[in-house]
Length: 207
Ligand code: AMP
Image (cartoon, rainbow, N blue to C red; front, top):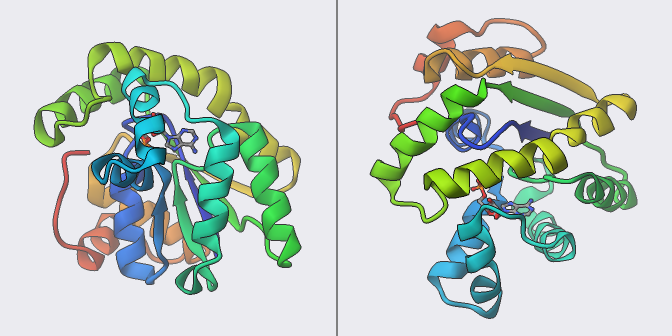
């Protein structure tokens, strides 16, 4: 399955993707984490991406598409992946569609984690104190929300228009509850709930 985990910054994509990956054995592919790793290793790509990320803007599409193409070609990604933070623009979504189509694949489902802006802001500022991410500042957050509304939100319409299954999940409840709901959707509506989330995964994170 190719699962796109979608939602605003601070909606819990990373946390949920990690948990769903642990339960299903499907690799979690986070473009933000890939970029942060490049920054940490001070590669050429990392040096290019770092100031863009710190400002809350998006890294150029062509670069992101190359990164994801590379990642999806790896053996562990062949049965499927959980995409977290990609695609973030309609051109990225179109490039992903083309890439998958070439291999007879397609996006299986888009899970849209819906969380109100006031709540994500609170979560991000709390995460800043825990993780120390350079883009979890109040200024960068404002820019990230602006970019999300303008560039990223239309990605859901792109998939809906293409007839891809889009599932909205309320991202406000407790982490376990949200995990349970996502797992239940992935299982086709059976089981789920907070129990499934708790039973499936142990460990916790700030969002
Ligand atoms: P994230 O961890 O998904 O919140 O991503 C952190 C930052 O990395 C974003 O604010 C962007 O600057 C950059 N980034 C991650 N994924 C993408 C993407 N698909 N397209 C463009 N920029 C991205």
